[in-house]
Length: 217
Ligand code: HEC
Image (cartoon, rainbow, N blue to C red; front, side, top):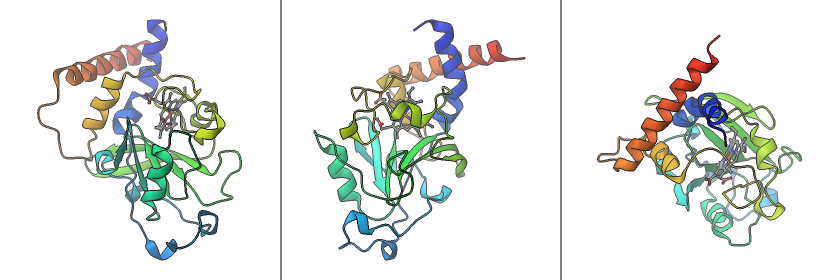
């Protein structure tokens, strides 16, 4: 991809990325009877900023992290780890970077998003602040609409992109993603960040700076 576009993309979204969010379950079991089938878990729940904490306290699945706000982590992990896909259960939280989150809401929340709610978060050592939430309003750090891009995932993946499910790519390498996850400001600092991750962060910071200069009025 041409460098200027990449720079612009980086600028537009980097803050969000580095800030990103982490869904950690407050797990109110009272709202989620363990015996109920997923469809019966329709009791509505409203994810709050406090639900999103240090991304690395969530559960790693390949390159991303998952959790379940309704206490059904096993069901979330089963879908995330399935080689053939599946439908994530209500309460599922999925994150690649601290500032961008997908939460599977109660059945009937939104047919358009297959009941996913998208979040943009501002994250800091003090925690998470929800900047934007909803079905169709959130954009990633590169200015792309979450739903538009994630809706391109093949149907069996329930809007989860990874690298091979049919979504357009994002301009972050695996090392960049790892470095961003390792520097979530809500987590304890990681000592001895590998040199390639430090380089990746420096490159991102540089691109963001250049891009900000280009976009200055
Ligand atoms: C241009 C397309 C695009 C846009 C826009 C986009 N994403 Fe993604 N997203 C991807 C791709 C591709 C991946 C997989 C990246 C990887 O694994 O390296 C991904 C990964 C993720 C993941 C990890 C699970 C998965 O699907 O692989 C989450 C969660 C996520 N994005 C949330 C969001 C949110 C929230 C927004 C909006 C704030 C957003 N994304 C905007 C393409 C996009």
